[in-house]
Image (tube, rainbow, N blue to C red; front, side):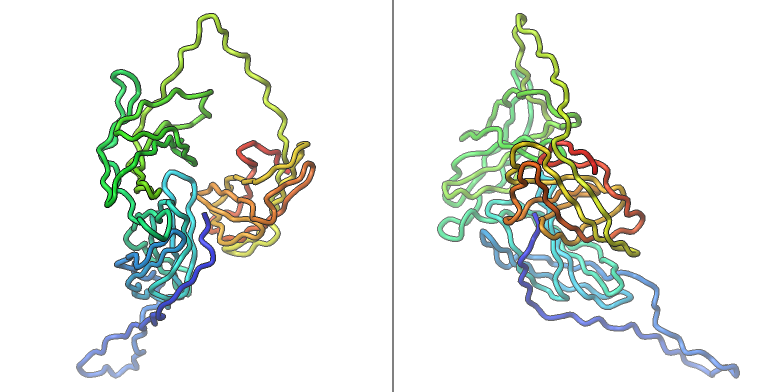
Length: 361
C-alpha cells in the first residue's frame, strides 16, 4: 500500500547551531584561529513519543516529539507503515512538523514508525513502533477485539491450531485463520467460533520456498478485526492419494505470455528514473495487474507514475491505477518510477505479471 493524499499539520522545529566553548587565561603571543562549530556529518536523534491522536476507518492522525538536529537542519519526516504478513511496506514524507494525518484502509493492520531527515539527506533512527488496526467503520461499534493469545500448533491427532479466547466490549463473534507463505502473501483458510482449528489439506503442490505459517484474528459483530497473533510454524494436512490413481504427468511449462522492458531513462549520483513497459502477448485482456521484480542493486523507489508501488528490501511490486487497470490482448501498459541508490543501480532481470513469469525485453 502506498500512502497518498497526506494532510500534515504542525509547527516547524528549527534546529539550533552548536556553539564553541570559550577558554580563560592569558593569550599566547602567536595568533590564534577561533574555534569553529563541528561540521562533521552526524544524523538527527530519533523522534520520540509517537502516539495516535485519531483513528478512523480511512484516516489516522499521528503526533510525536521532534528530533534534535545533528549536523544539519531537519527538513522533513518519513512515516513508515508496514502491513504484517504481506510484502507491503508503504510510507510517505511530510514537512518538518510534529503531527500528520495519513490514509489507511478499514481493518488493515499497520506497524508504524517515524524518522527525521535533514538537509544533507541523513535519516535519524526510527521512533518507537505502534501497531494498530483501523476500525471497520466510523459509526457504532469501532472497538476491535483483543488479540487472541497463546497460538499453538500441535499434531497429536492431525495438524491443529489452538489459542486463548479474545475479549471485546460488545462480544467476540468468531475467529479468522490465515495461512502465510512466509514471504509475500496471506490467505484466509477458515473461520470458526471456537478456539481450535483443524488445518485443512493443502491443495496442489506448494511453490518452492513456501513456508507454512498460520496466524489468527478475532472479529466482532460490527466486523472489526483484532490485531493478529504471532505466526506459528506448522504444516498442512496432506491428502492420501488412492493407490489406484497414478499421479498426473507434469504439464510442460507454457511459454511466457508477457514481456517486460525496463529502461533506465535518467541516472545521477544517488538517484534515477526508470520506465517499465509490460506487453500482454496473450489473446485475452488482463484485468487488474501487478508487476513484481527484484532490483539488481540497492535502489529504493520514492515515487511512481501510472502505478502504485510497494517495496520490501530489493523486491518491488507495481500495481495498476484506476485508469490503466486493463492491458488489452496484444496490448501494453507503461509506467515510470523514481528512486534513490547508493552502491548500485543495476536493473532487474526477471519479472512477474500477476505472479506469472514474463520474458525480459
